[in-house]
Length: 398
Ligand code: NDP
Image (spheres, helix red, strand yellow):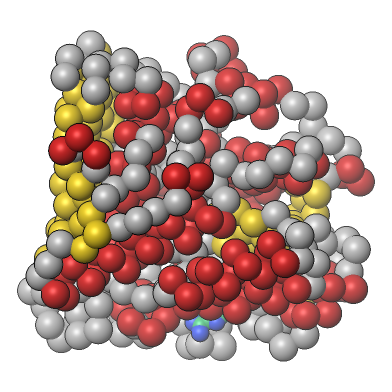
């Protein structure tokens, strides 16, 4: 058990845990041959990079050894070409023992939450990846940046706009690179949505529909149902992918949002929403009609354009993604998204480039998430004024 009393499955039921786990392993097993993805320039470039010898790789430390770190990030780090899992930060001593054995992590690179700041004195850690509950991302990202390390924070980057801004500021002040764990920007199906939408390959997109959700178990100790720790319900956890998907498919920012929440099980959902429905209004009258849920499984995004449609379903998981356009199936490979994401960040650090998914993008998304909650609470349209530099533009891909 972790010090929070949670189990190591992140509070998921065994069935749910195994289901999610199989999605991750499925992704790893389905790692593609390179020939089928020739169009994806960045993927090809990263995939074709020679694997660096261990002493040339960037050393990653994972903070918070729960479901995602254990089952997705640590295995993915074994597949990367530019990164090495070389450190951990955990509040659970038994995990430290197991991880040390499994990954050969030296004692001097194992920290807990109290001595975390001493990582500043450790030249064998280059990048810190925060995989803690949402409300803890800010504190540990800021402390990591102050310790002189490059930072990745998991999504949602923070539970308030103020926290997100402070994280961006801390990384900037310490001249450290900062990225968000937005793995789908490196995933072929989602990259295809970006290309089709942004390059208007079916004419201008006229509307978008998207949803992402799963049925959450009843365990009351789960932080995802705790407003203070999670910042909100399915919108923060799953809906953020739909917000992202609409933006990167269009390559444009929303101008305003409207929203409503729905709670059918008030005992279980006494702090966070159970279901949420929102609309994002983009320039030229384009609307993204979105939903997210902790009661229903779903994972889809569809763009209706002037001359056809394109869609993904499932759209946002770790593997098994499928795409289709009005001209036929996409036939793209499923890849190890996390490995590509972490190699891409290492590549940015090594070549002094900004991440395609920088902290300012995470800050932008926290602003949108908060605006969606405000719209739902007030029952009013909430206007947005967002930084255009936060867009991941296909034309900028190297
Ligand atoms: P878990 O609950 O499984 O793990 C969180 C870990 O944080 C715990 O195991 C524990 O690790 C540590 N922790 C420290 N303090 C606390 C506390 N008070 N309560 C609970 N845990 C604590 O969560 P997940 O791994 O599912 O999610 C972690 C983050 O990753 C979230 O922000 C989530 O949104 C994000 N995520 C992103 C995904 C993606 O696809 N990009 C997928 C899944 C999650 P320890 O015992 O080592 O201290």
